[in-house]
Length: 459
Image (cartoon, rainbow, N blue to C red; front, top):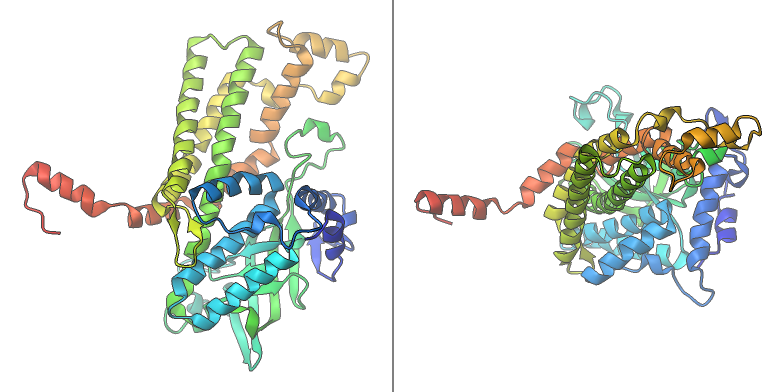
């Protein structure tokens, strides 16, 4: 197992990372990326055991109880631990689905997972390609590099080229899990490539952006200030991948297996995060209503009741996905596809309703309230405290802090990031609709309808 200090040292491996147009010399010293790296280091230290042979977060759950425990455990360790866990589970899920047809690739997957656990590394997921013209198939693009593809095959491996977008914390991990973004057809064998690439491999170039606040007073950003992770644009400029790191090469019929496996685990992660997030929004709505002195107003109570029902339905979907989990042939438990996808769709598509209710209850001070720094000014501080107070049970500073939490969480840069990622994480909303329809027991529903109508039913 690695300590946080060992993790930070592991980032000095020659990786090429750019941030806002500048090449980053040392990640740990960077004012933005360094803070994110420190968060990950703290996650390492939380579970470090000098006698352990692997990090407990990388254990593979084998039943519903284990699956439920892992969700809370991994969230507590931070974003990159969560991404690593879902990457491992994606590989194991995919392996279970191709084990009869691709035994060599499954053997490589299992070997890599064992090494990843033993070396306590962090993995990020590279799935979304640049895609070029959206109406054109990967193999028919004017620029063939619009999708990651093999440009050369050697006796000991392949060379790949292309780019992957929307990769959370790619610059802060150790390995890039590169998989096809969609199904491939005969003739697109070069695009049916799944593999694992070291972040510091020659030809890997990473461009980072971040929602982290640039304000000197990070106290005004109580949510995004302490916790932020970069989003990465990963360029693969003729990167060599050894054979033992290749999990799919040219088998077009299995290109979607990896994407669908990742989608399942990403959507479970999104659903679990949104379940916690919905409860937080309910709590903030109730608290700011009390601070404002409006908690007994009829329309405020009605909005909070609606929020409670929505949060409960999201939580129920998560519980159903876990409770009805399935155990694969390799012994790993994975969540139910129907409840995971339907729950993620519902939570993401209704998130703006939760936020709208919270904003309506809280009021305009979400975006117009003085800063926390103004409280420290001897001339204006006392007045700010005085006029920020509403309900005598809440002092002016507490109410002001509430407004800033709500703004940072839902109405500023980080709030915008959450709004978009809730929809796009794990694939857009339409992708969840497709999978929900696939797994919904339609035949049973139609049979019941026919029985009521009196139409004979032949299974």
